[in-house]
Length: 484
Image 1 (spheres, one colour):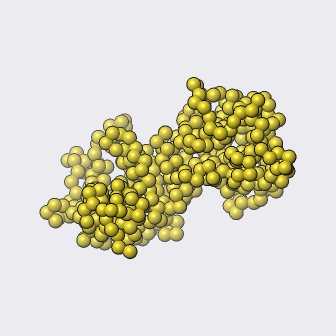
Image 2 (image 1 turned 30 degrees about the horizontal axis):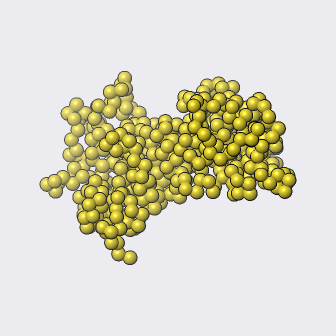
Image 3 (image 1 turned 30 degrees about the vertical axis):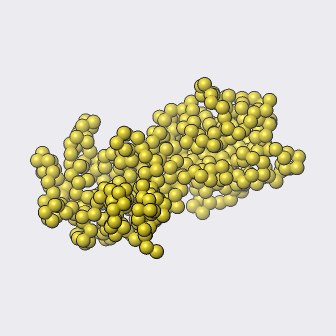
C-alpha cells in the first residue's frame, strides 16, 4: 500500500498515534533512523507497535552511557548532553550513516530521515521535572537538501513513566508532521499536541530550516507558541532564530524593557542606553554577565478586535533585530510574573526600565484582584527579588517633568510607594536627553500612516530607512523619500 507524502487530505478526526505511525510505516519511500537518549526508546516503540516497521526503521539506538555517547557523537565543549548542540550532532551523524550505508542507486526514491532526542526526565527527588531537545532531519524529495525541525520541551508531569509516554507521542507527531504537514507549518505546530495536553509538556523553542521551510520566519513561529498556549514566553535572537531562554538567561544579570516598540524610537533607545549604564554600575552586577531583553506582551500585540496582527508583530521584530536586540514575547501582563519567570534562570540582580505610566500601572490594584493576597502578594513576588526599577521621566503638557519624586499613585498606595522608593528600589534615570521627551511611538506611527513629514528624525539611526525599504507599519515608499 503506497501513501503519498505530498500534502495531507483533510481528516474528519485526529488520527491516533498508532495510525500516524502506521501511515509512516506503510509509505515505502520513508526510511530512517531513531536515536534517543535519556528516556528510553519511546518514539521508535510507537512505530514497532504499529506494524510494518521493517520498511521504515533502518536502525534504532540509545547511546545511554555517556562514554558510548561521546565515542559516537564526540565530546561537547561544556561536557553536557541535554543540549541543542548534542541533538544537532546526533541528527547529522545518523543521516551521514544512512547516506553512507544505503545506496541511492538501489533506492532512488527513498526519503531519508533521522529522528533524535536527548532528554532528562524528572529526578528521583522530584525537584527538577526534566527537559530535552527533540528534532528531525528529513527529506520530502529524493536527493533534495535536508530539512530540520528542532524544538525544546519541558516536562510538566510528576512521573518519569508518564513523561516517557508523552515524549513518545510528541516524537510521533513530529515525524508525521514533518512528512505530511510540512507545507503548513502553523498547523504542524498545533498538531504536535495531538493526543497530548498542555499540562503534560511545554514547547518553549522551535526552529525550522531547510528548502521546504525557506519562507518560514522563526520569529513568527515563536509567536505561535505563545499564541497557542504552548508556552508563556519565547525568545529570539537578533538573527531571527528562536533561542532557549534558559541558555540565554542562566545566572545572568537581566535588564528588561517592556514596550510596544511600534516603532522603536529615540526615547526607547535613550532609556535603554542610560538605564544599562546605571545598571552596570550596581555593586552586584557583572557587566560581562549582563543580558538586555526587549519584551513585548501578547496583550500588546492584540488589535482592537482582540486578534493578533502578525504583520504588525513582524514589523516590530525586524526593527528590534536590526538594532541587535534579543526579544522576548510573553503572556505576562503583570510585571511580577515577568520577574518570576526570569528568576527561574537567575538569582542575580535584575532591573526593569520603565516609563512613568508603566510604574503607575504597577501600583494599580485592579491588576491583582485575582491574587488572594492582592497587591501585597504581587509586590512580595516583584520586589522580594534583587530588583531595581529605573524610571525614565515624562514631560507634561506644561513642560514640567514627572519623576519618582512627584509621581502620583492612588492615595491607598502612597505609603507603599514611598516604602519602595526610599528603600532604593526605584531610581530615576537622570542622564536623559531632554530634547526628545516629546517623542511618542503612537505619534510616529500616525505620521507614518498619513505620510506626514518629519517622523524620520524621531527614530534611531537606520530605523527610518529600514521602515521605508521594507514598507513597515503601512509606510509607502511613495509617501516618504529617504535620503541615501
